[in-house]
Every structure is written in structure tokens, then in C-alpha cells.
Length: 441
Image 1 (cartoon, rainbow, N blue to C red):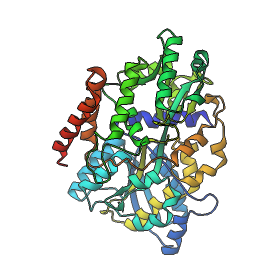
Image 2 (cartoon, rainbow, N blue to C red; image 1 turned 120 degrees about the vertical axis):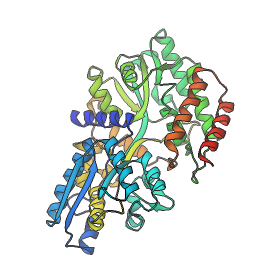
Image 3 (cartoon, helix red, strand yellow; image 1 turned 30 degrees about the vertical axis):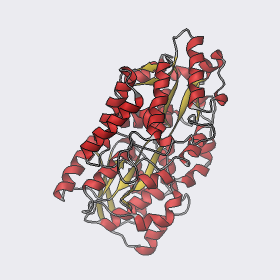
Image 4 (cartoon, rainbow, N blue to C red; image 1 turned 180 degrees about the vertical axis):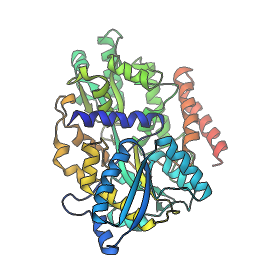
């Protein structure tokens, strides 16, 4: 795969780490997509102007989609505004509250979708009737995250399947075979061997113990769990939550964790060889290519270890979708464009190969591009691996409108457990009570 793809994937995630993630998807190649065919059948004379809010490479991909859509419907004009994530969310919130000043279509990250939909229950178009007949075209976890109170309020774009990136040379020197790492306990034992083999100079994994619970969230999703259950009630002291935090504490206690402070420090640790692995989404390949080109050929990817051998090893780390505000003055065109942009296979492929947006459109995974080897990972066919992971991601990431506030509480609890050596169960029991009191559930 082109170096540009790897670099741009990195750019996408760096933005998402500070503000929250990006995305893409598609449908047919030489023929019109199913939704585009539907558009032609239902309304071959679409006309009018719509405005789309997005950012960075997502906006560039939508511009490609707009160019194609305008050729199909010459009486339609689409204005793509590249505004930046924070501007989009700030202006979207203000506009929804005022009922004016809104776009016709907007990119929204997965962890924000339920928050907007809950706060403004009548604010967005209901895609349920449009997507139910074709929902199997998308990764199932994306349909789940785009569904709020029984309504599909967004149409899927990208997905961030998670895995373990590892240094092949460090593994080989320590006598560690990645194929023998089936469980997280196996992973810890392998980490011990690497720490011993390098006289403590190389740790197994980097974690920002006091400021980021990314590994914990991945482990929750892997177990088909999350901060909240399907009804939005916190389940932070569930068996799955205790399992996840206990496993992370075991890693720290075993001396195999490099405690980095912030994203940049984590990248530095990876670049300088302070860690042998990192748990991340598909976007990490771009970060590695961009930040550590000298390590080309020394990295590979393996699925997440399971909690028990044979259990699920798939999880998600980021993604986004498109939403259509109900206040749109040209909702018919807005809806048809959103459907087209997210279900046209050619656009999905452009988004992936040109702009690095990993699609949630399952059909595209059969494209030959997903069988290409990646030079940076020694020719390993990582796109096929990530496509396989994406199809198995549990749909348990019920973010709710209380996600951001709860995330802060979870991170604080993690810091208490890992840095202050507090008891896992007691800390999570206290966390559960605290969050229940804060959100009233």
C-alpha cells in the first residue's frame, strides 16, 4: 500500500486522540450503489443546494463524493466546508439549540452520536427505513453505535478495528513466538521474557496510566461490554470491567508497562524502542510509518489476545458517521447524498486508498486492495487482517450522552488503581456509585 495511505491514516488518528476520530464506507464500483439506484428510482430530478460540515481528509473524501453526485444530478450543488472538529461540534451544538444555522449533512464521531441524539431527540433524520434493508452491507457494530433509542440516526462511515502491533526483531531476540500468545496472561508472560532479555530496557506495552483508558476500553469491548449497558445504565463494576482493570494492573505489577505521559510521549517510546508492542487501531500503521520510517520491516500486527483461549479477540478503537439535521432546508437531497457518499463503493475505495479512511462497508473488503502486502510490516497483509477483525467487533459501545463525563471518572479510577495501588474491585465499586449519583441512573 502506498506510503501516503499510511501517513494519512496516522494524521487521522492524531486528530482523533485529542478531539476524537475520523471515517469512511461505500457500495458499488462500476454500477451505481444500491442507495444511488434508489435515489434514481425515487427522485431522478433532485435539485437544490446543500452544505456539508466535515474536517481534514473526511472533508476531502466528501468532496470526491460531491463531485460524482453532482454529475449524476446536475441540478444539485454541494458545498463542502472543512471546518475542523471542534468548530463542527461547537457550531452544531449552538445550531441545534437555536434551531437554525445548521448544515444539511455533518460528520460526527461515534462517541458523539448518542450524545447529540439524546440531547436533541428530534434533531436528526431517522435513517431506519433507509438502512434496515441494507444494514448487512455495513460492519454490524457500526449500525449498533449509530442506533439511538431504536432509531438509526446516522449512516456508517469508517471503523477502527483494534489489534496488537509488535516489534518482530525484539520478539525474535527474546525467543517470543507471537503465535503462542493466545490470552492476555500469555501476553504478560511474553512481556516478562522481553523485559528480562533486554535487562529492563524494553517494556511490553505503553500506557498513559493517569490520563488514558484506551486499553481498558478495548478490553471492555472485546468482552462485549462497555461503560454502560444497552439501557444506558453504568456497569463499571461488572465482571468484564473487573477483568479488564485486573489484567491491566497485572501488567503494571509485572513490570512490563512503560508509563508514558500523553500521546507524544507514547509515540517517542515506540520510536525509540522502549516498548515491544502497542495496542491500537488500524490507524497506528500510519503513525509508525510517519514517525519511525527507520523501523520499516520490523513491525507486524497480531489480533488482540483473548481473556480465555478461544474467546473473541475483536474490538474497536475509533470511527465516525454522517448525520442529517432535521432542520435541513433541502432534506431530500441531503439524505440522498449522505446515502450515496456512504454506500458508493468507488467513493469508499477512494477514501481508503487516497485518504486512509478504513471503511465499514463490508463489500469493499473483497477488493484486491485488501490483499496487498504492506512494506512497513514486512509484506504482511494487514488490511485483510483488520477487515476480518472489523466484521467481528461486538456492538457493545453504547456511548450515551454521559460518556465524556464518565470517561473522566474512569481515567481517575484507573490512576488510583495503577499508581496508588488501590484495590480493583473496591475502586470500581466506588466508581459505579459515583457515576450513578452523577448521571442519576
